[in-house]
Length: 78
Image: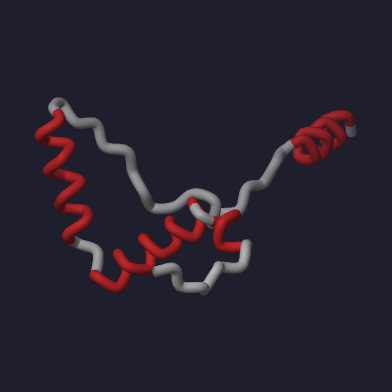
């Protein structure tokens, strides 16, 4: 009886994490900067140009989020 109660209390303390939290990315360890640069270049080459543009746009929107919230001044100054 006590064993079942102990198992239930242990199960209540467990945290179940969703599988979507962790991606399929792996960590690679390079022995030199040249090896690291080469592996990064291969990874970038495997991504489509459209994905590159989407990633760049997303990064720009994150970096300049506050500036993008403010209305732009559209007057031309010559």
